[in-house]
Length: 97
Image 1 (spheres, rainbow, N blue to C red):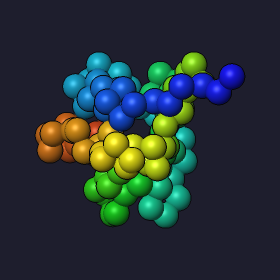
Image 2 (image 1 turned 30 degrees about the vertical axis):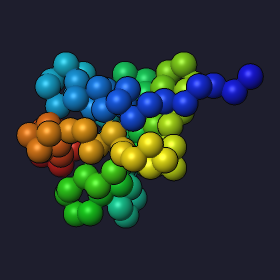
Image 3 (image 1 turned 90 degrees about the vertical axis):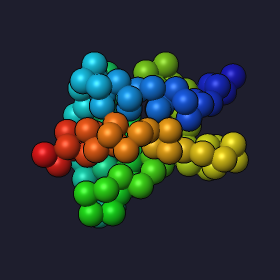
Image 4 (image 1 turned 180 degrees about the horizontal axis):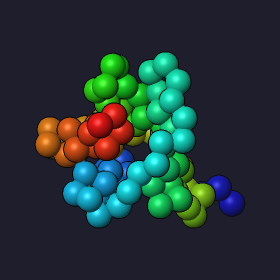
């Protein structure tokens, strides 16, 4: 049986917790334009331009559920779109200092 898909709001809540200092993130890998990060066992791929986050391409929860940009765009948004400007800046500071 396939796993249920992750909703954009679930991933947003995870990112919001990082912005508010309630969870820590760990940078796993950085390639041109993409970051692989881990937050409490969740694995995310975030796209960026320079040091500005653009969108979340993929997320896998610890229970195996996944969500992707394709899933979220069908419903009209992506997890980063829910972040306030302040929350996004906090995450960017944690990533790049």
